[in-house]
Length: 166
Image: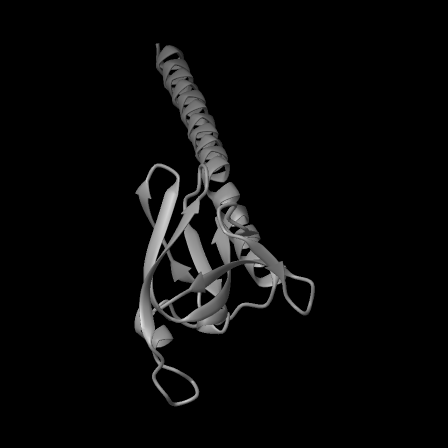
């Protein structure tokens, strides 16, 4: 009888040990699955963000100082020019973020546009009279807009152009 009780205790301990091992393996599998799911979502987002930043900085040198619209209304020469309210429109399919920059901000600012209709992006600015070169940054990529004429600058870089008349 003593031998039987000892044998049942050993069997119970063995069974508990096996159950603990199964639980440990199950927890490891859950953890591995969790890491897999995180890698599916987090790593591509980080790679996309790094890629977008790299494309913006490598496409051409742009200083991302500010997007404060008040910065563009002061003349660097020290005199105030006559300003005209201008609406800049861009049509970009499946865009998430659209910015515009140009000679009117000395190419130093990216001004965020807002989507006003499906695939139509807009910004309203006060610009001085004359010709202005502009380009768009759509989801991190330099783009031209088909509805504006184009012109090459002294470096051979093609820009959209617009004329603000009085």
